[in-house]
Length: 578
Picture 1 (cartoon, rainbow, N blue to C red):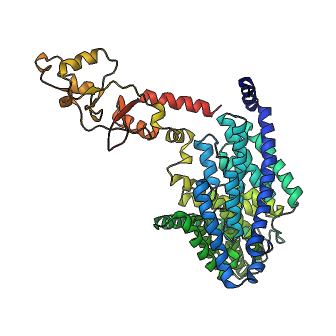
Picture 2 (picture 1 turned 180 degrees about the vertical axis):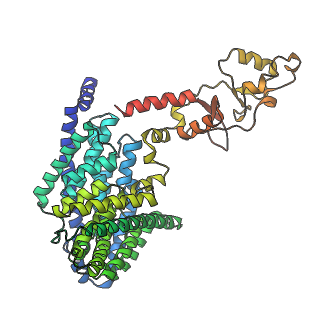
């Protein structure tokens, strides 16, 4: 392709109208990706269980050994796929998208679309206690990133296209275009700029239209008849929101404690997945409703077909099953499990409230709906997205006010107990702090080798003071790394070290540089981050910092200064905002 054509194509992607066209393309591809993913789950479930129907009915007809074996076999296939082909396909997917937006200018490997689709679909089909929403967000985001890479979009546009893909995924999955748009803006991108808003809206609307054409236009759940019996009921919904925030934090804590436990077991990672599947199958023998996406169990809570203590028991088991599924190496989202937990919590809470105050409270099903939204809000720290998703999924206008109360209070409680959401905590455990801002994360993403200078004014340790004085006169630097004959760093000599001896001619032939140099030298390696280098330089106000190959050999490979760091940082920041 001629170079002029490439330049023209890149320029076209920077135009606002061109960006909206790209949003249209990503929306269509994301919509078909979501529909295809749903169909793939049904196909694999038919292969695993012989039917894609109600999983509770399917499991009831199977012998006990198949209920245990099928999740184990699913894990046996999923584990190697993720381990050897795409490690980022493990887990719930949304944190990887947030990391790509914050640190990688929206770059997501193209293979993620295929590997995430296959691994997540098989995990869910085999009975993994995970949802399809997180994978679809990652799949849609990977589609948006791929479109941007193929058209050579700038980093700023790439991030917007990733947001378009995530909005398309959520919108198509939940039949909820407004919620999809809000999820992308509130959680994935964290911004509401008008240039970002327009293409994301287009993507969400088109993806929803495609989903409705192929899968139908109807609410995901049928809302129980609801009306506000008394204004006092708002206080009861507020208490439910507070409790939901505590449950959300409990789920988040359990998930990552389980990850730490599984990681501590010295065993091949890809073989932990089938073992987790077998344990999950054992759990499913007693509590089949916790397997799979869990919508069938949610309907039981909405229809009040479970007693309150059973719902609380299933809530605890679901937390355990989802934590085991994700920690064990399977692929899937935490959104549907959060909905399930919220339904069980709200159903149990509503049963208790209706028993105590039947004259002023609605039925337990209404509380199950509010509990669903509130637990999602508490886990994701996205109250607007949670509220809108439940509102659009149910189509129940009358329950808007309780939904808003529950979501806001749940989020406030969850943030007060633990500032990180279930998404940002995963990144924080990797050293990526989304909440500290893009600028600080940019410093963490850049390496010393990108900013350092390989041309170094170093001096040999055996150089005498007289020769060193002549060397200093012809150099523009005030401090110098000191090396031995093998170019290993042995110290650094600064102006403070040699200034008091330079004019004593009697010492010129007697003193060598090694005797003047500071031996305790702070260093960095080429693979260290600019954040680490900047922290060392700022702490002691160093003029320069030696760069060595590693701590063992200590070969001098370069030098880096405060100016070098700021120069590279400024260039990359300008580039990322284009």
